[in-house]
Length: 448
Image (cartoon, rainbow, N blue to C red; front, top):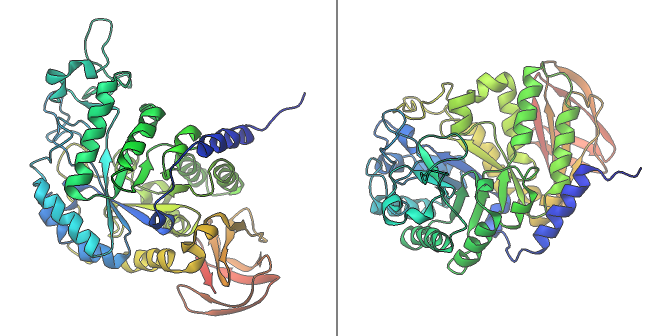
């Protein structure tokens, strides 16, 4: 019996979905990165004004896009902890007074733009908090159980689900999104649990809002599980990669073949212009599953190198540059400690600015021109090449605790003089194979 591989089926579905899309990604998203701002925990004040002082530092670090967790006020009914969840809003159109004012946010957006950064906000379309003003003004906007009560279908007891079968809800939601675009000048949206909201709503919303501005759309979903959503979104999470990397480290970091297989799945399914978003931490992972050092140990840094150099974009969470080694409270105040200069600032600055400025990473064609390179220790080492015209980048990462001497890497025809990014050491290559030494969990980036 003839069987079609599941990855091929997913690829075909994604291809058909993408072909029906009239959207193109904003050009700057192809070589950017996204920095998640947990405003409540960012400073001891937890305000927009206090965060604003960090903007020059973040711009110097090479941050491309600031993603603010929801800025909206939080419901009091069924509130968790002393401050509640960001993701249980009581209004879509105002700023939580604990953070500041809409004018203060406009000023942050303006200054970020002056410093060369974009700004997106978290949009929670699937549900609201339990005392959102729509529960009084528009109860028909919500799903109801057999007893006529509002409810949430996913076990979250501080939120209630919206009903996208109601066309008036859709219009109201799009108008709320438009208000933020018009009033604050934001550059796009990170859409929370996007797969819980019907894909046809996101199509409707993007079609309507693109008439105002060309925006960046980041989905909290994995395209391997929800390929049809990539007809709308420019970038999406890589949960399957994150889970594979977590399991790999937990099981002793023995064989990376499954990691390479998962990367191949993303290449098969994603359209060439779409950006997988690679990450080692975010607000959920940090608070509920542990910091990147709890999950990955010494593997955290080489994973950061991978995230910044592979096809797609990297997501960075507040405080990873410190580096923050504590789980932040989710429903209560638990500020980051900025008493000392962030120890990893220079590391991230080096990576993020390389990603933005080197032609092998910055061109649209290079986004699809990624070649896995064979190496002599392929159960420990991931090696790949990015190339555009005369610009080439070769990335070699040791995902093991072992020092590797005389590692042989097949350069797939790349010859000439390469300069290693972190050490400035030159490598003369003839286009065949080349030998290199890697420290445990070591990495090198050769540039031409």
